[in-house]
Length: 443
Image (cartoon, rainbow, N blue to C red):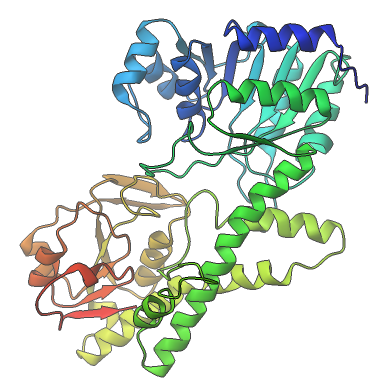
């Protein structure tokens, strides 16, 4: 690896970034890539988004938004002014000075990393690489991906890292639906494969992010992100296990936690639910677990947390069965309404949502299951295809059980409880209700 702090390519690239003449490429215009592309365009960079879904690319070029955390008005103006456009291939990579990769990093069925998107994109970029470019991976992954997977592919171009091109990792920290923290005001971690790459990437991100924190390497930056999500996964597993214990003891886990969290030091609030979902918590800890096994190291906490969190939807199914049995209603002859299929409140994202697991488990017992979600009109997920039902008095009265799986703010829970026969509340949203709660059972 060559380190040249006086690199002409580095100096020219930094100058382009500082005077906003650098062309920015963003690969993947999803929940991470599109908000980032908009932020860069807002401060005067010309941004080319590479989005291989032609429907999404067409929407961008018409100024039509499809990501909740993006302002539709801002997007339309930026497209109209020529600061943002989308393409479906990599032919324009040579025009880009900074290329930011925001592609999915899912798991295989065996809970091992699936980096096909990162690898394919890196190969496509390598085919158009030229001197004076920054490539930065934002996708969450195991420590070593940037240096061990991406760098060798990019070096096949014949260009020299830290002299002719620069490579870094800066993990995304997007929290969909969060109205307080956005791309701009969320602290950004940056680590390059060398000091020059770190300097270029730091300069690049400082143009749009309020606070940029550099670390010593890309590998460190990668570990920062998987630790952040593993921290959450482990603590959620802890309160989920406490919930299982409280169920056995006949205690309210919500009362226990609310009391515990009054302590002003030494504790941090986490709450149970029907499971874990989304693009991070169910996935990212397994990336770290897999990397640790490669080093002959066993991550006991991570493994145990995953095991606990994965079995919570089964507990929800069992609790539904228990409540129905008390009413003399077999689950196989019951109709159950699931309220919310998104993985968190007030978003439309249902990836890895525990509500989908609950639906599958209930249907597996012979129950008729319908759902209502004001953010998800319909969905297709691994062979499961459903449409949202209107939330009416007739629907509520016709169902033997309502399971509150996602605590969306738009749902009228007073109305739900008034007309439902039974309610299993997995999110403790009923704490906000006044009056009688005799129909409600907390998870």
